[in-house]
Image 1 (cartoon, rainbow, N blue to C red):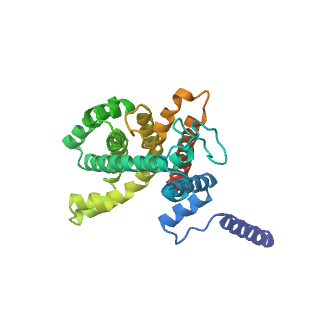
Image 2 (tube, helix red, strand yellow):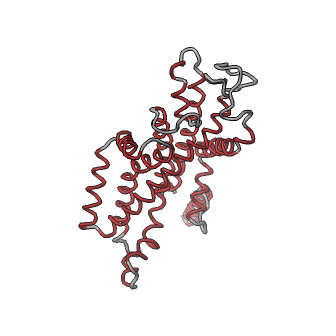
Image 3 (cartoon, rainbow, N blue to C red):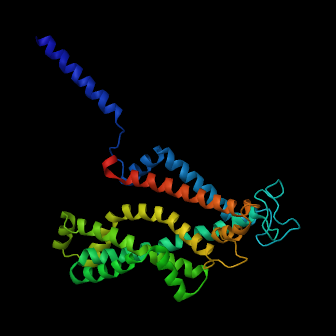
Length: 305
């Protein structure tokens, strides 16, 4: 009987060793290293990040790697894709591949800048609303509800109608349209965090409200905001492309993906590459950002650790 008990204990210890060995070792790792570890293991996120980096590097190096200038016409208008013009030429004979490279600098910049506006303004307002509550929360909530009552495209059209056409106004319009999402997210996170023990300890220690918000609460809401911002860049690029497609954003001869798609819509059946190539560029960058954002969301989710 004693031998049976000893054998059972030995087997149990062996099983515990096997289970422990099967789990990834996370002791001593910081939150950032754990997040990076899970992100690297996500093949979709790695593919999205790689594709995004390739696109970004190519657009940044457009003056070096583009075979032609973005506004240099040739003697071959509406030429299909070939060895001389990889993406073909448009109605004026301009190389579409070169224009896609230059246009990526504009489209990606619009997406990043508009998200910065929306996240900074919306995040700050959400931080204030969630921390102070009361009338401040009610007033900001009413303003947020008013913005939410407008569809995103309609709100952007209203802003552009006031400010006028142009890329700078498109950035502002798309940024204002993204404020409500950040305000709601940050407000909910702050309301959940303001009653936690470490916040109460900071209050008891005599910390000011601004110090508590910036040093104690804000770092704990940056994870969800980062995920939302990453995914919002893709939405902002699509919104900006839609506004340029309507003629409210980039003006000729500025190469912007949405404007390029609009430039070939009248020749879509006969000269499909004029709209298809910049459309594929939009699809590729949006796909890459969404894959990266999904992987980042999974990596930052504590339930998956």
